[in-house]
Image (cartoon, rainbow, N blue to C red; front, top):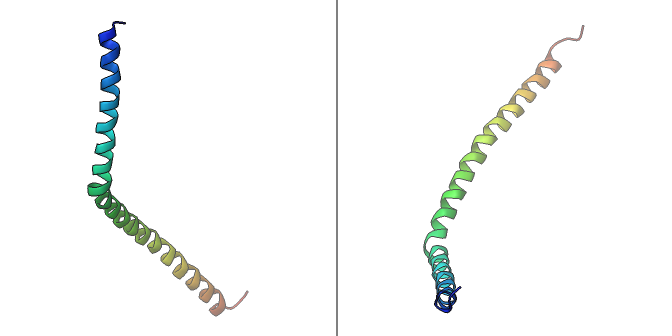
Length: 74
């Protein structure tokens, strides 16, 4: 490995690290909130979707228990 190549590596690696760090800072400050809002909105929609099944199961269980109480035992 030549001295010029070794010197190039010692310059390129830190520059790439600095560019990556700056990119991360920009992403956190400008774009992270947008992605979090979309994620929270999607999670809220999914939780509402799940709750429809829970509500339906509760109604079915309630209807079944009422049916058992009103029907005479054999």
